[in-house]
Amino acid sequence: MMANSAVTAVWTPEAAKEYGKDPCQAKNTLGALAERLVAGYACVWLIVTAAGADVIRMLAAPAFHDAAVLVPFIAAGVLFYGISHLANASLLLVRRLDHAMWCWIVGSVVGLFLNFLLVPQFGRIGAALTQTITFALIARRDCLRAQKHYPLTLDWMRLAVLMVGTSSWVASCPSVG
Image 1 (cartoon, rainbow, N blue to C red):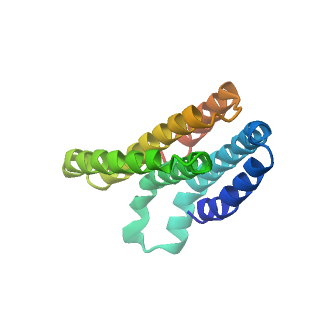
Image 2: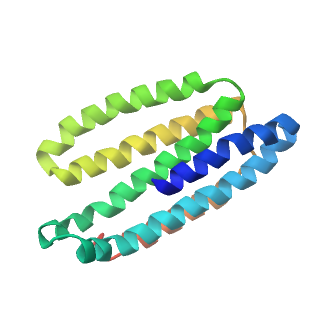
């Protein structure tokens, strides 16, 4: 979460500054930067997942050690939360932040429904999975809306390979298995 806050605190004003200079050129500059930030978020997801179980075992009482299985889900939720904020900056630039509001309202309803559905059956895994799914849906919708109103130049294939590759590495982490 700290990485998201730090990036958002810098990303939004810098995006506004870049947009103010030249909105057409900013699509390229901000697109390249957004790709790097998503790559950074994916690396943080991988590192947190890889080290999370060991950190929990080092710092927490033995009663909490089995919580390590939640780390990949919670870290993925944070990844998607960060991606959502990157997209929201684009919506802010074109004064369409109302779209983000609706994404979050719909995401809240989906989250409540998934909690109602998954938590009774799967407990804390269901809650962690709900968070991941909800933030992924919000991020997806925010990105689609942002790209509709102010399309950044993005290499979608590179982003897809990055996410698939990182997901594969995360799935192979000991805390996941």
